[in-house]
Image (cartoon, rainbow, N blue to C red):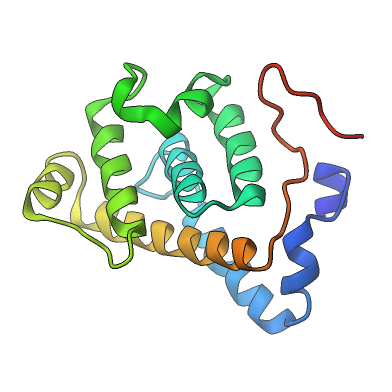
Length: 166
C-alpha cells in the first residue's frame, strides 16, 4: 500500500516488518488515532505530530508528518512555522495550547504544569486531552524509534527552495 501511495516502501517499515505482529498492533493504534470521529481535528493532529518529530530530531518523521500537515492545512505556511510557533501569528489559541503540551509531554521527563493543564481544559474536553496525550505518546515512540535507528528522510515533503531527491 505504501508503494502505491508514496511510490516506495517507507524506510521505517523495513524495521517494523521484522516484527509483523508488533507492526500490526502499531498500525491499528495509528488507525484508531486517525479515525474520522476523533475529537481532534486532522490539522491539529498533524501539527502536533510534526512538532514532536522536530523535538525528537527524527528526519523521517519530520518529512512524513510535514507532508501530511501540508496536505491537511492546504499549504506550507504552518509547516514552515511550526518550529517557531510561539513567534508566529498562524496558530490559534487552541493550537498554541496543544503545541505547548506537545513540547511538555516530549520533554524527558515530561513537564506539564498546572497552568498548561488549565489552558488545555479551556480548549479541549477530557476525552480530547486523553486522545491528544495518546497521539503524543505514539509520536514520541515512533520518532524515537526512527531516530535511534537513524532512519533517514525520504524526500516526501519538499520545503520551498529544496530539491526533491531522485
